[in-house]
Every structure is written in C-alpha cells, then in structure tokens.
Image (cartoon, rainbow, N blue to C red; front, side, top):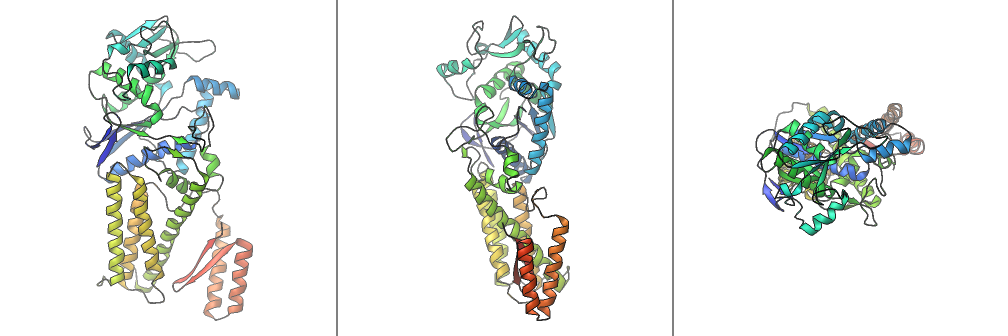
Length: 489
C-alpha cells in the first residue's frame, strides 16, 4: 500500500510507527454551515480510515474543532449570540451533515476551549527552551530557532516572508515568527495565562491536541492543501522543537480544494454551497459521497451540479442492482430452500464469480496505489454491469443451487467494496424517501396485480398499472421472478 507524503513529495510504502495507526485530521472552525468543500475533506479522510481498516490496520482517529477563533467571534456578532453559542450551533450542523454522508464518528473529538491548560503548558515549554518569546502579553514562536522551517511546503525565504503578512506585527524579531498566544482584545473571550489574559494562536492548538491524544509522533495527518502553509508548517516547527523527535508526522495527506466553476476556492470567506442545501434538493447522501470520491483526492475538484446529477444516476444503478440481487436471492431461496446443497457451477455462474473476484482485485490495486478512488469506483461499476447482465439472462429458467451461490457472491462483493468507500446502498436518512404507509399501499397494489396476472385478468392488471402510475408515479417491470417497481424521478 502506497501513500503520497506531502513532506517528501512522493509516494511511499505505508509503514506506521506502531499499531493502531495514529491519525489526526484538522477539523472545522464552526463559524457557519458546513459547505461541500468541508464534506470532501471529511469524506476523503473517512475513506482513508475505512481502507486502512479493510487492509488490516486498526486506526485511532482524532479530529478537532477549533471552537474559538476570530471568525467564530465574528459569527457570534453577526448573529447576535455569544461566540460559544455560534460554535455549538455549527458543530451540531457538522454532525448532522456528516451522518447523512456516512462519515463515521472519530474515536476522539477535541475542542480547543477544553485544552487551554495544556496549550499554556506547551507554550511555556517553548519559551523555556528558547523557541518562543513574550511581547507585551503576546507570545511568538521564533522561526530562526528551528532551522528546518519550510521543509513541508518547500517555500523559499522570499515566499515565506510573503506568507508572514498573515500575522503582521512590527515588534516581531523575524517577520516569519507566528503567534502562540494572543493577548485579549476588548469584548473577546479570554483565559488567564502567565502572560496575561488572552487566547491561543491557531497553530499551537492542533499540535497540543494531536500530541495529547496520539503521542509525540503521528502516523497520518490529514487536512486540506490550503493548510500546508502556514498551519501545518508551523505545527511541525513547534512540535519538533518541543519534543526533539522527527518526524512529527510520518505521512502528510492533503486533500485538494473544491472550487467553484469560476476557479474560486469554495470557502466561508467567499462563496460556498452548503452540504444541507445539496441534500435537501433531493440528492441522496450516498450519491453526494460518490461524487466527492469520483476524482483523486489530491486533485482539485470543481463543484458541478451536472456531475452530482450523474453521480445520483450512478448510485441508483448500484442501489437498484443490490435490490435486484436481494429479490433474486429471495426468489431462489423460496424455490430451493436457503440451505440448498452446492452443485457444479455453469459457465455463466463461473463468469460472474470470476468478475466478482476481478472487481475486488482491481479495487484493491487502485486503492493500494495512493487511494485512487476513481478506478476503484469503476471496478464496482463493472461488477454492477456484469451482475445485471447475469440477472437479465436468467429468463424463466428455474433457479439452481449454483444460481443462488452466484447471486450471493455478487452481492457480497458489491456490498463489501461499497462499504469500504462508505457508499451505502440504501439512503436510510433520505428525507425524500417514501413514507411507510405509501410504500405499503404500493406493495399491496403490486401484489393485487400479480394475482390478476396469475388469473389472466389482463384488464384488471392494466387498471392497477394505471393506478400505480397516476397515483404514485410508479413504474412496473415484469420479470420471470416477479414484478419489480420504481418511482419515477
């Protein structure tokens, strides 16, 4: 298994320091509703975690919330509520949206406001070791004290000087020095510290929380490419300066930005599309997740309603195939019994079994090659295509035990691989799903039509078909194994 490491600029064999794999992901600053760019980051890292576990690596996954920040303070002022209430509101929105996208909860969530004592101790240790200094209640990290600064981003001094404008302060010893602690401004949240009232700088927060939960060295650190400099660069500098251990992170895994068609990065500071607005427009959560995994995670992804719509069609094909396999397995079990003895497979059954194994092999090869989800999705597409061909070719022949075995194997592999990608084959959280009473009414009419067809009462069968179409927009398809139905989009 190969992972691309931003720090070395190349793919490397994945070799964790110890098990479980220690994985830290920079989470949201909860200052507004999660947008689709956030969703890409968290879906990608959830998929990294799932695939590691699939390949036999247990994972401890930690994700933070930066729940105090200039922008959260601004959000509270914008909405006329305390900054802490704004942070809680949008943290809740994160959990709501990620559940719809089947992003598994982290093993541990860390919150900056619960780590103030540890952050203060970290900063004090950097001061004591000569890596930081105090200026009138502010504390800055001394970049010249860490000779390897710039190792992650590969920026030269000129580029880093330009980046230093992010934190302008003429008092700093070096323009590149960055804040570890900020003295309190009027009407802002603050905490007591040895340097006076204030709050943490952004970069020190993640180093403190990562090392407190995972130890002094981390196997995988995830985040967006926009965090490479200065955030992750600064994390390395302060962490390795404190511990003396290198590397702080074995594999830096950075997800490409989601951009708007104009080329502008989707961000709360500019234009953005919320996850909830996409999901409430009728896009199933699994289909949106499929769209977010449709391109290699390191590549930029342009937000496209057309591509999302294509992913809906693609996902429904997977979901419909799984439903077809379930129906045919039930049909075969009803005919043969669930414990039918095995028999020599026929040519079509052998071909389907070979395709299932080939799909798994192609999937693993793609994911082993730096988590390349695009060909991994294509491997599942091919299995779906072959399974449908097999199902359509059954005709009116009675099932055999080899038929049942082939159907089960195809469904087992389809579910196994889609689960690794976190793409559910049923959207249980879909707000547009049929109410139970409506579904029951449709099923009852379908059953009545089957009775009419069995009695060769074609007039009644046609009447029921029209009723299903006009009342519920249901399309009936008759197969040798019974009728199936779908609701028109």
